[in-house]
Length: 279
Figure 1: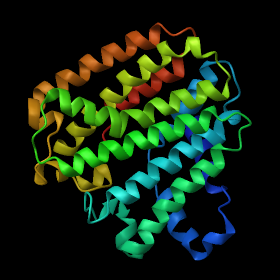
Figure 2: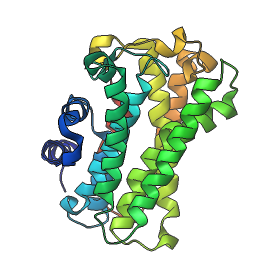
Figure 3: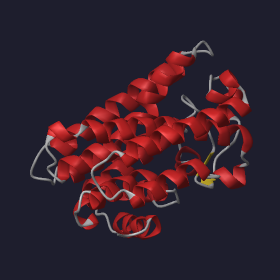
């Protein structure tokens, strides 16, 4: 079994070698700037680790894993735009719209999303692309709620927002691996349950870091949600309670993980990294 760091190295190497459509011309510079400018690669590593847990060679899952990172990067490029979250810093460097201008950043995000589907459609079956589309629609729907709601979310609505905006793509990391591995659909639910709990854990930790981290640690501007008046797990419950909720979520994640019929040791390593991360 490869470690999380070994899987991340596989992802980095594959991302650096991805060919983009010639029609994009010099726009490719903006794509590579945002895609290769850093990042924890949690989503593609989660896909590879799931494939390996299912008994397959991780390299077979690299197209799906990279497509997930392309979609994630598209979402970051667009989230940072002045019309959305309006952030000038991403992954420790100027956001795409600061570096290249707003118009180029919009086009770069569009191209990243389209290239993601061009990549995942290389699999003979349509299921991985279907899962990616399902996740992307959820992300966009969640972002719509985020930008049209002014601090009026209760706990249930906040959970639903992040189930769409954050959780759907994390769930797709698992689902794409299941699809590529041709796991029968009757065996998917236990994996999806694990993914849903992991998405909640990820978001609570993200809200805690936004409230407590620095720009140097996070690679982005901290405190943006609070400054914008957005509801987070910290603003709704307080910092200490949010930390308790994160620990509770981690316990549920581990319960789901232990129930899976696979060698989940690397997935467990990734869960620990998500809970303990500082960036």
